[in-house]
Structure formats: C-alpha cells, structure tokens
Amino acid sequence: MTQLILFTEIENEICILLAQRINLNKDFYLKLNGPRGKAIHEKNENMEACVIRECFEEAEIVLRNEKLVKIFEETSIYLHPLEEPPKQTELYTLGPWHLYKIKDLLKHQNELVPVLGENIELIDGKIKTYEQDVLELPINI
Image 1 (tube, rainbow, N blue to C red):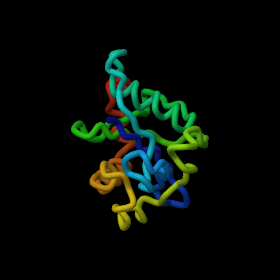
Image 2 (cartoon, one colour):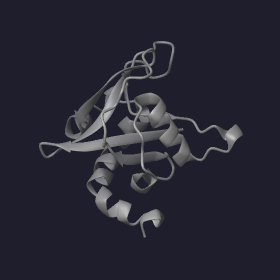
Image 3 (cartoon, rainbow, N blue to C red):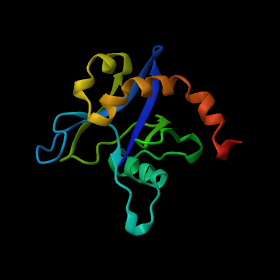
C-alpha cells in the first residue's frame, strides 16, 4: 500500500491535500486521506509507479519522478509538492479535495486514515527537509 502526501505552503503555513473517504462500504469511512493505492503486482508495478498512477486516477495530478521522495521505507509514504489543482475523479469514494494546515492535523490525528495519523509528525518533519532530500535523490545527482 502506498500513501502520497501532496504539500504546499500558503501564508507561511505547510498544507497538505486531503479528501474525506465517503463510501461507507470501504475502510476508514469519513477519515481524511491523500492519494493512495496498491501496486498491481501482476504487471510488476513498483511502488513509485503505483503512487504516480494512483495520484492521476484520484486527482488527475501528474507527478514528476525527480520530485517524488519516499520518506519512510516501512510505510511507503511519499512526498511531492502540489503543483497543480486537483480534480475530483472518484465521486463515490472521495469527497472534494481540500488543503489542510499540518499544524491543525497534528492536533486532530484521529480524523486521518491510520497511516497518516500514526506518522503525521514524521511527515511534518520530512516536509520541512524536503528541499535537501530531493537534491540527494539518485535521479538528481
């Protein structure tokens, strides 16, 4: 399972793009979630390709490999700056996309899907060091 954090800065506040899960027949009903999904193993899809595909399927946002940073090996959480507005594509699964201040999410971790709630402090720290981390990617050296 992969989880993508699309982030931006607005008025000196770090914000991440999330949508509420609205299908009561699916896991984590009413929890806030970013683009996420499972790799298609039958097609030998790796985790990076999965993140890129899921982001396009769920929000019609195209990611750039050289800006995609995996922040924590065990959880397959990735960071990428938000560079274009999202579209609502999965009308029966996700509500509209909104930007949430990370400082507010730190106080309301129970409103997030578990992988985000459990790792929101790590995510916050990694967003703050993103610029340096992206320079150290093999694709950018």
